[in-house]
Structures are given as structure tokens and as C-alpha cells.
Image (cartoon, rainbow, N blue to C red; front, top):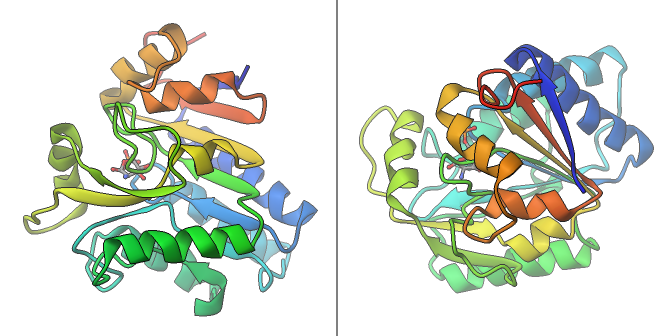
Length: 243
Ligand SMILES: N[C@@H]1[C@@H](O)[C@H](O)[C@@H](COP(=O)(O)O)O[C@@H]1O
């Protein structure tokens, strides 16, 4: 069974999540780490950056892997997953390009891009740590409800809730209908998984994850079966279950 922690605030959630990433890289200075984009982890990144600077941690052997990207966008597009990670994590930490494995959502061949990322992660022996957010529909990365769970890396047609929520990341309208993402098979085989959710908009899906069945209709619920997985929910996201 996964562990579930309830904390009062987004700040507490961020401190805990940052500690998890920090402890992983301290134990394994050449860890392969995947950190989701989105809004929820941004404060986690700040705290992680402060900690690494405070302790003068050498991150030069860490590999950072991207979780997902909107098809049609790349790191130069403000609001893309890569652009967010560049701004909030990679640039402040001075991470070198050869330490980053990230999807190019503008690649000529999307299947080729899936293969490139799949092979790169395979060569590294898989992921040591992943920090995930949860979509309002329960998605992880871009693994939408009902996606096949036996994929390592794949292209997904985004559902309406995801397209709708995309608006918060972009200052002008973007037409995104597909995403490229690490698949559930790869995510679930990660050695340590931390999943965070904050905000009232996540309360209904968090309630389903806590009280509903483990089902591929709610991809995040699949984490419930894993010992190495931990959920951290703040009071706003877990309002129906806060203890
Ligand atoms: N595809 C991304 C996910 O990688 C992210 O973790 C999730 C939650 O995002 P947020 O933290 O902004 O709520 O949805 C987005 O659509």
C-alpha cells in the first residue's frame, strides 16, 4: 500500500516534497530524477534549490528526465513543460544540457521522439525518483483516464479537462490536443514515487484516489498498490478526507 500524508498547507507539502528529492540525491549522487512541471511543484523547486545551495550539493552527476510535453511546443514556448522546468529548476541550478533528457514536442517524428526518450532512460537503468502532480481527471503526466498501462513512453490524445486546464499555463490561447509522456509502465517502475496535490480543484479526484477503487480510469489511483509510492495532500486538496 502507498503511504498517504496529509499536511495543512501547500508550504508544508512543498517542504516535505523537497526533502524527498534532496534525500534521494544525497543517497545517490548519480540518480536519475524525473520532476513534473505544472504549478503544484514550483514552490518545491524553490525549497530544493535553497537546500542544495545551502549544503553546496554537487548535482553534476544527476540526470533530470522530463515527464511530459505538449505536442507542438518546445522549450522556447513559454508555458511548455520544458520551459517551466528551465525557468524554475534547471537555470537556477545551472543544470547542463547533457544532464537533461526531455521531450521535444516539435520533433518531426513523435514516434521517433518516444523511442529516443525510451532508449535514453533504458540506458540509464530506469528512474530512481519521480515527483508527480495530479490532473483534475486523475492523470499522471499525460496519462489520461483509460490510457493503456503497459506503455513506457507514448503519445496521448488529451481529454477536454486537460485541454481546458492548459489555459492556466499560457498567456495566449494555444491549440494543444496531444501530449507526449512517460507511460504508466515506466512511472510505476520508478524506485521511489512522490505524488503531490494541492488546491480545491483537486479535491474531488483526491477523494476518489483515497476512497475509490484502484482503476486505470483514475491513473493516479494505480499508485495505491505500490509500497514505494507516497501521496502528499494538503488540506485544500484533501478537504473531504482531512484527518
Ligand atoms: N501534464 C501536467 C502534469 O505533468 C501535471 O503534474 C498535472 C498537474 O498540474 P498542476 O500542478 O498545474 O495542477 O497536470 C498537467 O497537465
